[in-house]
Amino acid sequence: MSAPNPDSGTHPAIKGLAAAIGVAILVISGFSFFEASAVSERVQDPAPGEKGQPRKGAFAKKGMGKEALKEPYKGVSTNGQIIRGLFPVRSTGVTTEPVRVAAEAFLAALTPDERAKTTFPVNDIEWRDWMNVHMYPRKGVSLRMMTAPQREVAMALLKASLSVRGLKTSVDIMKLNHTLGELLDNLHEMDEDLYFFTLMGTPSSTEPWGWQIDGHHLIINYFVLGDQVVMTPTFFGSEPTVATSGKYQGTEVLQVEQNKGLAFVNTLTADQRKTAIVMGSKRGENLLAGAFRDNVVLDYAGIKASEFTPAQTEQFLDLIGEYVGKTDDGHAQVKMDDVKAHLADTSFAWIGAHDPASVFYYRIQSPVVLIEFDHQSPGPLGMGRGGLGGPPPGGPDGPGGPPPGGGGPGGPGGGRPATRQHIHAIVRTPNGNDYGKDLLRQHYEQHPHAN
Image 1 (cartoon, rainbow, N blue to C red):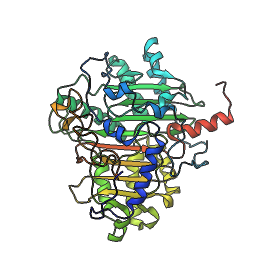
Image 2: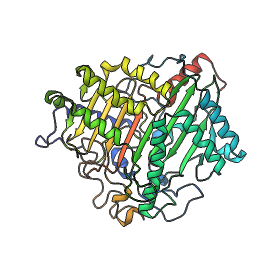
Image 3: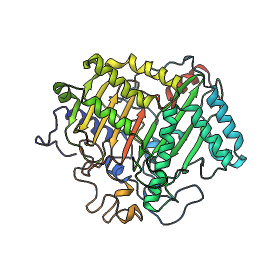
Image 4: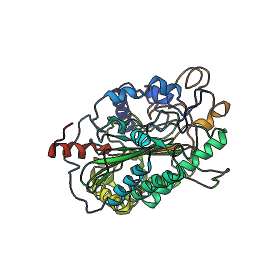
């Protein structure tokens, strides 16, 4: 990792963030930031895939990230140690019956063969085997594989589980994947129906279970235990982020999250910004807790929420609510109550400028929630040959290999310019409860199972 340039506008606080990034490289088994920058959204092979399944890219064949799955799940932490007791098994008073009924209807609509492809044990590694790039071999049944009635019940499962804005964001990401396919003349691999559904466990009012949707720029992991819900990791992204032409012209995603983040950082005083802005310039990718980074170690960076004024605190919680509020309204409120209970231990970090047209990264982190928003380098739209046909000469990052500085102080791809037309965002539950893992652990302790 290159040393920070004292003339680059980097605040001394970047040392803490850079240290966290250095630790992250060490703890992600077999998946360094050099590899992460290679996992760009590029088409690799000309060989067609099966119906509903994009062809495999070179990185998928190499098994990039698969080594991380061999590492036992621990969870996101600040120092490698998990804080226990944050997520007790309890009643929330918010029903999950509509989700259970919708899941049962979805399973009933599948053929026996499709059902066998779609269902896994509740503790299966399939939960963790997701990827936001389009060229990744996925399990389950895609919307493209389904009949019209099957698609209807699949989307009904999303509708029962998500809020109105959560459903709209998800559907609009799918639509913009179609826009990307139009722009690249490649609807075979980038389209609105290339999203795969899997179910873990058996839908139940008392036993643990859940579902996952996995596809380009959209991953939702939805765990249920009684009336408790954990909807993380959740990945939202798009390229483009605004459709200016085509079938879905006018569709846009992640603009609210972008604009609210920018508005919030501009509520900070000059002194507060000196603490919050850990790097004054933004290039490349900075998101750290993406695919195969379930055990990433990230120390707190930026400014503590305890330093906010009441008005800033209200605006900050509204920003967090944009992400938490993607789940159904009742469970979103339950989660926001947890967020508020740990507000004094919540930090906000920013990379980049904060003028109206700037590109930037921000991170919100507490013991119970981790949110990252990142303007990315161009993906397929920025690649040579229309984004098709494989990596440019010299390897996945073009002539000379990875960008200058490797991961750089802000994460992978530190040398390439970022754009507002390519955004990644992720929400995680730190301290061992992504995928509802901590709830599942406690359930097994209280109710031993055969396996």
